[in-house]
Length: 107
Image (cartoon, rainbow, N blue to C red; front, top):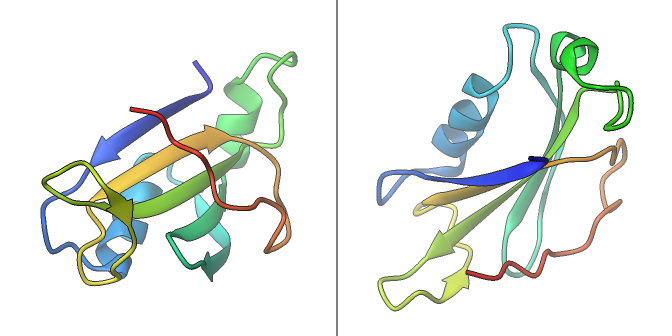
């Protein structure tokens, strides 16, 4: 598996979402960058410990791309920084902001 999603409580702020994302990484996890897009927020996290534990075929950088979205009761997605209720994690090296455009997430 190279990705997964995680639900957060309704009305979670972006800062709470960032903290929840970091909590998924080993203790050396850090935020490399964050960006706000029209329909989401994005961040790139990195953990050397994670990178060392991954198979070489996946990559050893320990970088994780995270998209932060707001999912409504009807299943629509957008972004509200005061209601960031879903995190989408993907292993991926996007060391600079803008290295990845908005994701198409299929449910």
